[in-house]
Image (cartoon, rainbow, N blue to C red; front, top):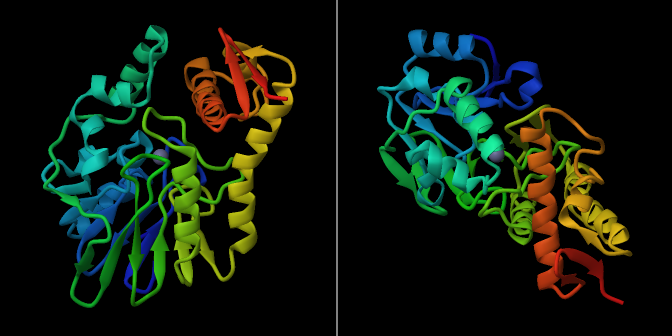
Length: 295
Ligand SMILES: [Zn+2]
């Protein structure tokens, strides 16, 4: 089977280096558990046909992590209770992205249904924060890592010291925290929590996905993306700006990108989080539609 064996685990890289709309999957051989089934439909189909997949675990509710869950309709899956609501129906799913623009909503509804095979499904159970799961020869610690999503989970394989970190993915793009219930400060706390775990190997949901040895510099760069977005925003707000004007500065994505329903939506979502946080912290003023730095 394709993939890379890491002690008791098999790391299955996603198509296109695990870039969205794909992600890297992890398979726990002995227990027949597949984490985040969205890497490569063909490989996952083969895994289903040739190996026993007895349970699916989801790190969080995002579509690029459940894309091929439909291959495993008769297999029980688990997720955190906090991240379960968007999997109960497409309208709730879109609400959780705080998606208000009707055109964007229509684009996303079709995409999530057709490309990501969204089906409302009931989980067999929920993970508890800090739950210790005994799989016989391996012990897995469930690590709550809210911020990206409220119920995002990492999984730490204690004996082999392998940590699967989901979307705390150490990519140059940096963290996403643009959903209705995403939170910048929780994201920072989760980064610190993951950083403190003495893992020898770190696996992530996207891109490189497999890191051994020291990743100190990568962690710093990843966290600094947040502060850099914030710094650029504060510079921009030296003179008053509306949210639309902030969005058109493309601080997150660097330049205008298509489709708008994806990139303009994402830029707006992340900038809104920064603006709300800066207002709350008393760093900027909001006067009607305009935001400006406080002197
Ligand atoms: Zn995600």
